[in-house]
Length: 155
Image (cartoon, rainbow, N blue to C red; front, side, top):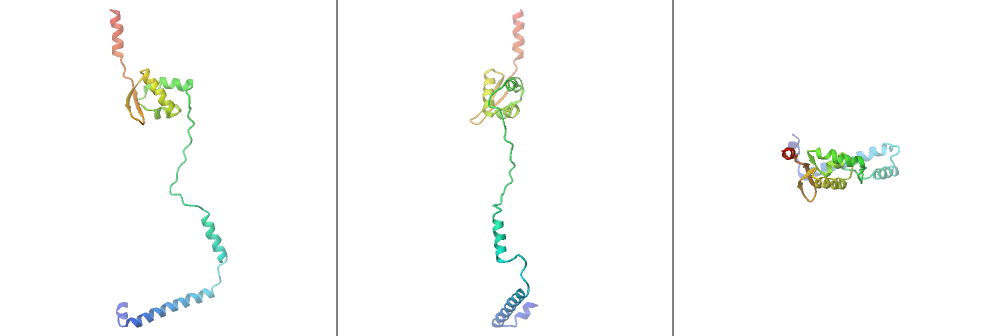
C-alpha cells in the first residue's frame, strides 16, 4: 500500500520528502541531546580511560592449554629400577621405551638402553625397528628343548 502511495509522486518530490525527514531526524536528535544532562563519568576523559583500560587486558587466547606436570624421571638406574627392569619388563606383552619409561619412572633414553641390554641377554626379542622407535616382545619360551635335554642326558 505504501508503494502505491509513493508511486504518485515524481522523483524530485520524493527526494524532497526524504530530505525533510532526514532534517527533522537530525534536529530531533540534536534538540534532545541538548536537553538531556550528560551522564555522570562519561566525559571524553573518562571514555579515553575506559578505552585504554580495555587495551591493557591483552590479546585473547584462542586455546586453553592445560599445563602438564613436569616429570621428574630418573636419569640413572638404581637397584630398585634395575631389578624391576629385569623381573617385570620381560613379562609385558608389548615393550617400548616409552612404556618402560612411564612404568619405571626413568627417562626414555635410559629405558631404550636397558631394553637393548635385555635384548642382548635374550630376555626379550626385537619385533620392529625404525628410526624413531623400537618395539620389543616377550622372548619365546623354549621349554620343550630344555626339558628334552635332561631326558637325553639321563639316558
